[in-house]
Image (cartoon, rainbow, N blue to C red; front, side, top):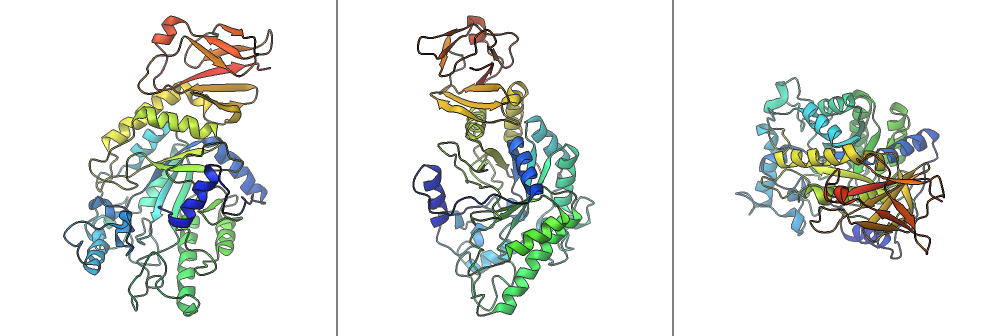
Length: 462
């Protein structure tokens, strides 16, 4: 994660209505990919899992070994004063990694109950540690140096994908293009200077070719040994032409030869292999005319941090409503602990999301933005002839307003309005200006069917 600098600035400008500094979205041409993209846009809500041996230190994933003077690269602990000592200790974290409480079936059930429909799991982050059984390196969870390697669950990525697939989830493999452990990316002949390859690939083409070959082999392992795959979520957007070309066209063609219709998400590298965009930790102000997904942390960190502060249920539910009303998907990240568990607070949030989705899920799954998109505390989604008006109360308000005016018109004699979770139509009247006023009965107003946000279902709009 953590695409920064010019990439972040140009994306922010595009999202907030400024002049975009990136080329326009390039729709896929493959009919199978287009079908998969339409399927993905119906799912709306997904779970992301950042996990690796770094969880034992409770530090940011990978970035503390990046020698950049940035806040997210800060090193802590007894080795913080010496970069090389720190990197050596960090790279030995696998030798103490033993997630004995790892139970991906529990994760999958909790995510399904929350209304999530797809998962994206970190098979390899920038530090290069593989959470799957690759033949390309010993820096992996199944190596004999890792205490967990003898456990039948040791191939963590396979276990995660299998557990979520059993619950009907779409499957996404997060894969980092940079690899800070690889001697063909950070060549030991030179010290690393920043996040980039520490040598000029044009000057040492054989070494770079070896790195590209390994990258393709690892992706092919994931595409051939881990069951049906829906998404290849590529991170590390600075690994891109002209300097760091890993032949994404060839990689995508290979991956799709094994997984027809696979969505390839080459993050922040505009073109035909960025099948959908992934604004990080932000939500666009307006609906966008291309496929997109907000990837966001439930807590403050992508990876596990003891005592992390998690967003409350109201914030998460209203984020989901806003994102979907603007045409996006919500990929919500949780970082498992070193033992392989989700924080009890994170599980509680998933339960709260599930309680809301049990009442209102039809206004989320399979919907698209619906004009007028937003009006005050209301945001709108729709499917077919039904429009959903999501009322997002401010602050801690727990009661519906007695009356609600919508800039919409019902067809005479045929239209009606419901509140999801409440049986029966609500009283409505047409105002002089043509808008629609919904009257909320007092008992319903004070005792709504769910908390944090309420959804009116409008059938038969004029």
